[in-house]
Image 1 (cartoon, rainbow, N blue to C red):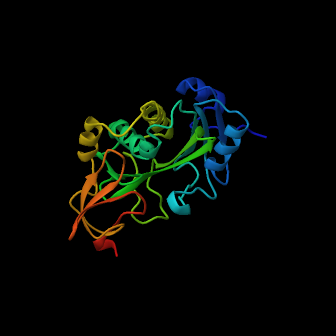
Image 2: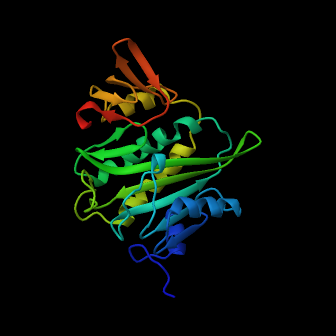
Image 3: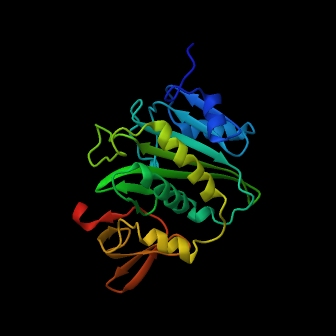
Length: 248
């Protein structure tokens, strides 16, 4: 069997390049998230990366399917073992912010953020993030950070965006992985600096929402809630998906 490669590099070569303890590279999988949980259950160390050239059943929040065509992007999940559960509730926002700032260098314009876990370029979705944690006795055993990132726009998905023409998957991986790890290293609620940086990239602020509350999006809170100015006052939404009124 021919060993899977990403832009000409094997799993061992990717791990060395990215300074990771381990990397699994697959040609075709159902979901890198499922493989990451299985690897973590076997004792995979923090920083283990699972990457696939193609996914048949990549998933996003709420079980939504993420289009994962062969060679079109990065379909990956990283296993991390945080020393503290502090900050888990805002991890998807932190990962998104760190990745957006890193990927600016490879995009035609500033990468923006849509609560709770999407990256946008222009009016198109560039990436989605999914965080799944496993707990034991009130302690987080591991966190799986799944990322679906379009390097080129997905041809079968309306509203899909990609990075600048000519950007390779390896170039994107070189920036995305350190950004993911930097986000995991942070603890606690979002700081004032993080909120300011997020606000500068907020795709949703000022737009009218129909879900998870009806009103105008005002931003996010330090603990990760979406803040919506409704007719009866500000509402902080912890769960749900953000749907704009014009998209109904």
